[in-house]
Length: 123
Image (cartoon, rainbow, N blue to C red; front, side, top):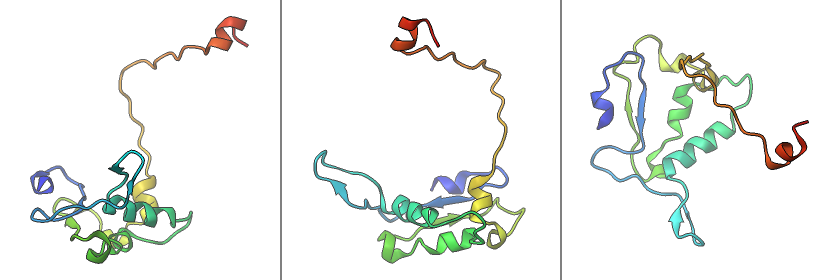
């Protein structure tokens, strides 16, 4: 799998199924005729929606939600380069709530005023 080819430090890779398995959808929209979400994403979102500020739930707690019964496959985990901190100590809120300042070197794009604002001259 792709995760086996990641060599950068501090990468935690999770896949919806093993190489020899399929990843399945969770329901579909009859109107448009396609699946709206896969089972892995559905289970992840279900878990994340229950997390509240101050939660002590860890990544291990989140990974336990990915059971074969819920996914119809076995989630694949690769922690080969995640060596700086035990995942049992990483809070879900810390992992997903971290912020990083990114400087792209590109000036911000100016958003054009709406039709009403242009017609009235702004304010």
